[in-house]
Image (tube, rainbow, N blue to C red):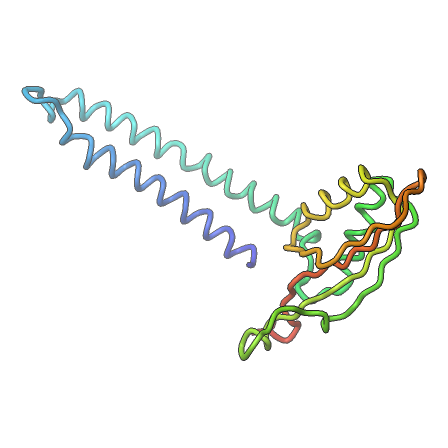
Length: 190
């Protein structure tokens, strides 16, 4: 999704909220007076007018918030991976292993051939699975931290296989097979 599309969605959502509040205030609320009360009393209209004025005055603040959110999206844009970027997971693994204090981490790209999914037709043209094998030596606590950080990345990942060997005080040998779904490069231009 492009920056303009995100801004339009946020602006549209904000306008829907403002419209909903105005409809509630001017259409639904006036008819809910108690029996015998003056539903159309000037005091009710005055309070509704004050509420509407407050909403109108908040529009510049809402626009500033939309602009701020747009700037945040722009700031995070370099971290959002290209859909067909094969090195994305490698960069994430390096970053996470450094954060969690992992040692002896090695990784190898397995390509797109390892797949349990049976894509057909249009799906097969648009998507491919990328697979990585990650080898490391760590304790169970470090492995838990590593997996937690890996799951918090900006893509949906699936750990297809995990093997843990040894009972060494310095850490166990761990092998992970991680897959993620990626859009093929040719479909991005469409």
